[in-house]
Every structure is written in C-alpha cells, then in structure tokens.
Length: 442
Image (cartoon, rainbow, N blue to C red):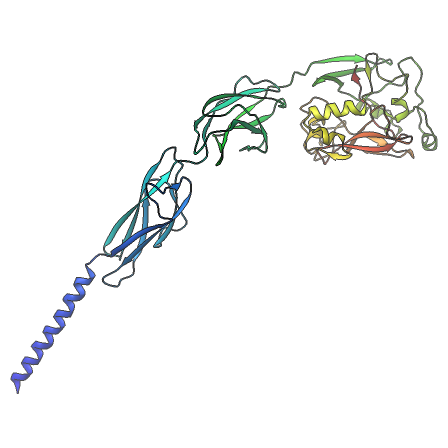
C-alpha cells in the first residue's frame, strides 16, 4: 500500500518539473522579427524623393507570448508622430545627391530585445538647390543681392533671382527679380524700396519640378535725406519745411490772413455767414486765436483755389495729384491712391506727429494709431469747420485741402487722418468746409 503512494508522488513531481523548464525556455527567448518593410518600397532604382514620407512596418512575435514594446532609430531624417508602435512614418532629409539611410526597429518583450534594419533609398532633391548671397550696396531705395544655384535638380533651371518682402520668408508672389537661368552664381538688383525699412530676401531657382529657395537674409535701407529749411509768408509767419521724396513740404499748417498779393482773406466767425459764403474765408478753430499757433487756420476751399494764391512765393497748395505723389512715395499703390475712402495700410502713420496724450496741445488723442512720422511731415489734428459753421475733430482728426481740380461745382477732394487709424483717407466734402492747408514747393 505504501509502495504505490511513493511511486505516485515521484511521477507527479517529475511532470511538474518538466513544465517549469519549458516555461523558463520560452521566457528567455527574445522576440522574433519576421520582416521589416516600407510603403512605398524603395531600391537603388526606385528612390524615395528627398523630404518625402515613407511608412515603415515591423512584424514581430514573442515566443513567450509576452507583450511587445517598440522603438525606432534612424541615422538621419526624422520620425513623424509616435515611435512606440510597430508602424512609423519617417521623413527623408533634403539631399543634394542620392543617399541611403538605415532605419532600425527595436522590439522588446520587457526582458530581451531584438533589432532589425531596413535601408531606405533616397533620391536627390527634384527642385533646385540654391544659396542666398548677402545684401550689399544698400541705399534708400535700392540694394544688390543674388545667390548661387548649387544643383539644378531633376531638370534645367529656367529662371533664377531673388524675392523680397517686408514680411519674413518671401515667395514668388512677392517682389522678385529674374536673373538668367542655369546653375552657378548670379547678381540681382533690388529696386523700388522704401527708406528706413527692413526687408527679407531669399534667392530662388525654378525648374520643371518647382521652385527652390535659399536661406533668408535681411537688411534695412538707409535713412531718408530730410533736407530742411524755413520759408516766410506775407504776414511774416515762419514755417519749417522738409524734403519728402522729390517734394518739399511745409511741416506746419498755414496761418496767413492775406493772399500773396496782399489782399485780405475774410475772417468769418458767424455761422450763417460762413454757410452762405462762396468766396475765400478763414477761421480759428472754435473762433479761438489760441489755436492759431498750434494748429494754424481753417480755410474754405475757395481760399485755397483763389488765383491770388495763399502760399508764399515759390510755393502752392498741392493738387490732388501731388497728394497722390506723396502717398505713393510712402508706399501706397497707384491704384490705391486713385481710390476714394480709406486707402493703404500705414501711410497715414508715416506722416502723423507722434505727439500724443499726455503731451499738451498740439497733439493727437490716444491711441494715435500707427504714428511714426518717419516722413517728417508732422501732421497735427487741427479739426474742421463744417459748412454750417460748427467746429469739431480737434485732437482726433486732421483735414487738408488739395487745390484744383475740384470734384464738382459744390464738392472737392480732401485728405483726412484720424487718431485711431493709420491710413490716409480721400473723401469729397462741400467746398464751404474749413480745413487745414499745407504748402508744397513749386
């Protein structure tokens, strides 16, 4: 009876020991990598275009049926998204020549790991490779740049040059030059620039596959040559003037009470008389002489268009076209200059004085949007007198009359600046309105 019990125990022990050995062997076998493949597949004759993306998949199993963990390495390029999955996306680097890159998959069961590699064959860039030269010979309105086409890509470079803008990373839709074709160095002349402005430049080259750009460089144009001086009107008032582009402008609003020949310009204070007047007249803002030194006088259009002329000898009230010349010099397009209403972006800021609250008058009310006065024009908000004789706008708005031509029998163009805008507005107003006047040199 006892003999059979002993035999049973030995057999049972032997069976348990065999199972433990088998489990132990499974635990110490590393994961098996069955295959690694890419989509799309690559080869020396079927290369992945540089900068393109390829998906790489590893198929692995665990002898011990343990959970598998994944990680990836590459000798160049970079992975897109998570790299802890059995499938990853890899973005090839830019290459100026055909190249091969090894991608390694590391598969682990938590104790042991296995590694497998796949070679991705990458082709050189399809678009041209180009370098941007430094900017030289910088003036107020021009500069010299260029670059070098290092590699033409998959086909001949048909056009090359530089692109530039006041915003970073300019493209062909911005300003550009066309400086020949093919590979090698080239020189570009950059024109039409604004003084005291920062520009960004990139060389470019175009072939049948597209356009390649060089690295970005930046430069700042030279400061304006603000020639200044003074001029005296018939009443003895002294005005500073400044050169803006090809024009000389007064930096202050006109204050004369007489035409150039000595005839008196009527001073009208009463509202009804102002409303019914169709000849030249002027007024102080709110009929207060204290506003004369700071903002000048307000003249109706009939005074600025009078053939006796209100500006000093050698000077005149600018025409609508001369205002447009100033505006286009400041950066407004000709199409924008011809439009009515608010135009452009920051041309108004370039001529507004930077005097702002809490500065005492003369000054703009806050926020004085966009004001830089980089032109030196120094516009101040002298307000207006309406055709009915009312006053308004001091501190908020500047209104300026152009001279001939008027828009119609009753209306003429004007220019308006605002404390909360950086544009220059071109609008039609009744000729009986009272606005400020600036003179420009003949």
